[in-house]
Image (tube, rainbow, N blue to C red):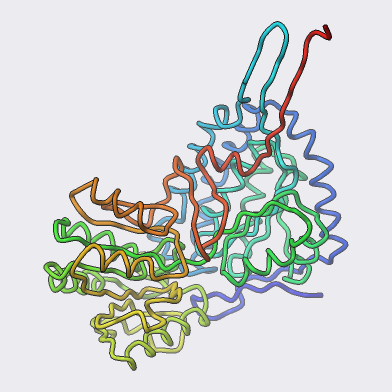
Length: 462
């Protein structure tokens, strides 16, 4: 029997383990989801919406368990209260637009014809969720998919092994039928076999580029719809007219919050030469105020990374950049919890960096950021586009027209002006290049979780 294990970054102990399903048992779970889907989809939309929101409310009632459990699994400090703010905001928003998003597009309704396009649920949706924001990323698909009439099979990352159980517990206790929303534990080979056999009608994967490629390969030839949110190396650009203090506060938070483990975290910053020195000085001071330590301590503001192997990648990237001439500015002695071996990693800012370094090109996914000086919009644009990823960009200026003009030239999914690292549920969350394909949330998210069906009804035969 294969066991799926969660090794806690808090102390390196085995925090939780669950047996992986056999392929036969996994197929049985999918069969139950298929058998229940049509009945679920026939329930009125407002009833499905109410049940989903009841599940959201029930999870909120479980915060005393969920928040410390999350700290043990992936290291986020309990002082931040889990992910409830974004979890609730996204759920409530998609509920508010569900009727509009799923309404038929009526072409004609006359005495002779009814012609319309309706949105129909795909069927069984497979959600493969990541560990970095395990509740918020999962709900991006779960809430609208259930509201649209799909059933859900959820597989969570091993690092957040208990999250899927908590989600299903909350939704089932709120009245969602057990076969409509199921959590399962799978090893990679079983998951790939399920996908390759055409078990699902739509798959949403959030994770690494390598993981996305594995999903695509497994699904090849099955014609299963895919949504893939993969890697990122999101840039910030601070122009000469930026509000300096606001830029420092937002970009440093975007670079280091959650120990930098954010899909849309800021990983590289380009600053106009007139503000460069001041921006760097203020940023170092800002980052140096963190308290790195045990996430179960209410005074801790920066917890460990989710696993020691992730911390190793960050340290290796920093060391490689320094060997090539980069200069680290944050005094790591301020963070004694970082002994260079565990998952506890001190925040770091590097200058004298360039794009020959992996630190400025490969996903770091840790509490470290590089800052480069630029002379013009054209130079900044060239550097921002010099990436194989494209999720978000954060532009800092007082001129919306300038930001929009630059935004049209930047290869990215979302353009922010004077903010960063935020997912607006009214807008489509999407990426380009190796960041992935498809889009979640907004009306477009509902469209991706359903398929169009056309009705051409002739009322008379003459």
